[in-house]
Length: 203
Ligand SMILES: C[S@@+](CC[C@H](N)C(=O)[O-])C[C@H]1O[C@@H](n2cnc3c(N)ncnc32)[C@H](O)[C@@H]1O
Image 1 (tube, rainbow, N blue to C red):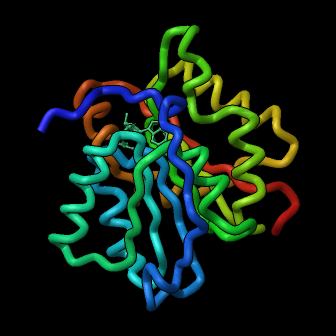
Image 2: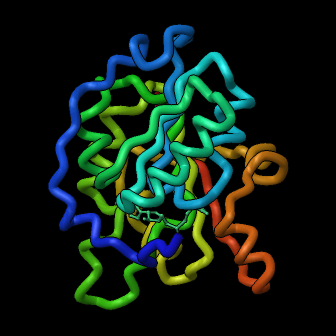
């Protein structure tokens, strides 16, 4: 099935009901992770299988991508994944209670290279303001990209925000992190940039 390469997240005007985690996943243990832009990567499936008593929520702005991933979830009879379609930023703001998320994963967000498309990039100060309210006190944000100018912008955005600091998690990046886009980057010998961020003074 052909999937459009890029879909403008700002043209997606869908709104979201508050998530009722227990009705979505009856064995819910109180932990929720959220992946924005899972694409065709298996990360969300593997992560849910590894953590089968917590809820893993995923969103992608491309509807066909969500439908394909939902088929895989159903085929594997995975009960602790909840997928939805739309803009990850709006979803984060509307769907989750404050201080409810353990981890947010953002792997290889679309770079939107042209200056006139700059607003479509996910990680900016407005987004971090929402992230800050939705993360639990010890929650973390995992971010990767293979686009150097985008990485610079992402790091500058986090660094300019007094609420966030870096969190060392080499175990995750060395032994756990694997996405479809990261595989493509490796095949093409592109460098992947990555980091984990957490809230300051929350430990
Ligand atoms: C380059 S792909 C990376 C897919 C996957 N994370 C990986 O590493 O293989 C980026 C994905 O993020 C989705 N995306 C981009 N901006 C988004 C947004 N604001 N909200 C939800 N999904 C978004 C795109 O539709 C696409 O599927």
